[in-house]
Image 1 (cartoon, rainbow, N blue to C red):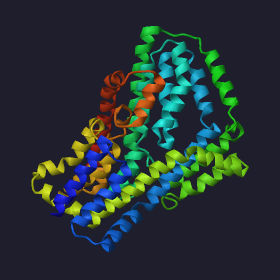
Image 2: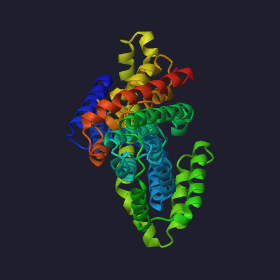
Image 3: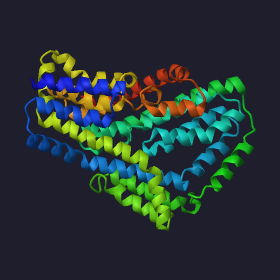
Image 4: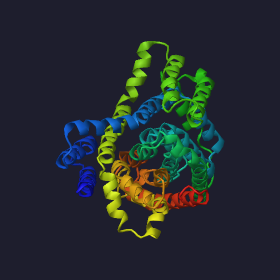
Length: 432
């Protein structure tokens, strides 16, 4: 019966999330509680289950909260402004250089793991240039989507955080071996941007009329009171130090960002009022995402500690041939990107992935392997073209393009990039 209750929890979760009948918080917390009670567990046992789940994801949730704040503050200070201006100047009206520069800007903008901020920064910086050169805004949207999607594998990004949380694995152990895979993916993004730029160049040629737009961007940035141009080097060194400390596990997970946020605030904004304003400006996105992660802790705690996950895995494992079970990581890696069109990140990572992982474990495949397979495409390369994410609609709204046009042009490229990354992961032995 536990397997049946577990499947019902997953199905209802998917239904509620995909139809948006309830909030994701309700689906993750209340639904498993109801079925755990039906299964005969008392409130004391439920408390232990939920406590275990929250404990297992505490560091992850804290890291996500402070990482979002840290990179938000870095963008506020204008740390990336020289890069944006430099790329615009370097392009000199060449569409190829502009598309590659767009990709670089989007990659850097996505260091905070937020699709919304990435598209706001990238499209705002580059759309006037595209318009002045008569380049297609669709090209801008596609390049930004590919860059942001591939960068979304960062350990504080939504998919990787969710995978680590749902599988109860260390997020750095999950991500670190994937760095070469992501680097190859980013190189593919640059190659795709080069190809898209060549198409634009054949259509319009080279136009050297961008100086007015550059001046306009500079003037706008100079008037922004949050900018700290004299602190760019200091902020860059601080950012590098935080990332190095995180990747090398010099400190326990989350500590680098917990320390980095107050340092970033005091270095750039001396008054308490200014510091509070910076925190409040990023509070909405930070709190929403963090509450989802902690809600997911309760969800995974109940399903794992109650034995539902194990029961579901045993039931499905008996129906899957050995060859099929061993191929699960490969299938997830190659199909993750198109699955982004069917499952939003919460329903996939908290509903589908734990079951698939439990099945795979019956064939000797580690949970962390399934997590790595998932983040290759599911809501990484796939999130900017998925109708299930708000960032997609922000992107098409800012660029002024249609969703269908974006999907038609971006999906083949995104799928190709995810397939290349899956092949690299397979060669490196990360999918076995």
